Amino acid sequence: MVNIMRDVTVCFSGHRPEKFPFEGAEKSVFISQIKSMLHLQIYEALLKGYTRFISGMARGVDLWACEIVLGLKQEFPQIELICAIPYEGYASRWFGVDKLAYNNYIHKAEEVHIISESYNKACMRKRNVFMVDNSSLLIAVCGDPRSGTGQTIRYARKQGVEVKLIRTSDEEI
Image 1: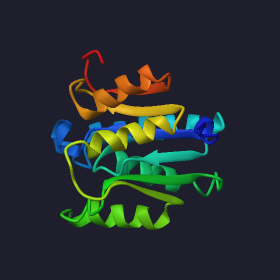
Image 2: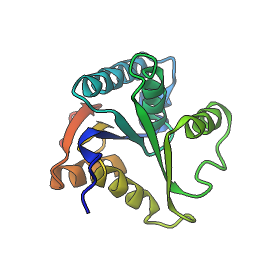
Image 3: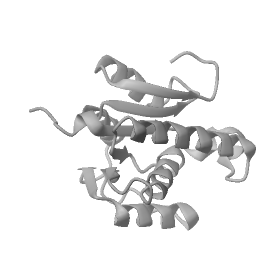
């Protein structure tokens, strides 16, 4: 079965805040630069006709992407946010700003897909496969090729999905 929406769909992958310098401190110059580059990639995708954006809803890059996508809705009202949650109760142990953002984005999303009923060791990978299999563009922020983001990038390339990579190190993926 062919996903006819795939041609206008982007997905995201990236590290959690603690994997970045300064542990992803929101006020750091490094994170501001990452967010600016992410914003630019999303904006360029919109100008190319992409309208659907899938977030894996992890802390860090995924939630930052949600914030940017929803922020661009005023200028691009056709934007749709799709949340791909790895398992039921995924954010139940989160707290603070991340928990508030997660709940806000879920509430504002046009679609929410829960990949597994409960946690299992394959649910994160299945979430990433779901996102790539339903997209024609992956925007990734990666510095560690051995990470889940590195695996997602390699899978996307293998599937012929275009990858826009924001590198945070010189390591080859």
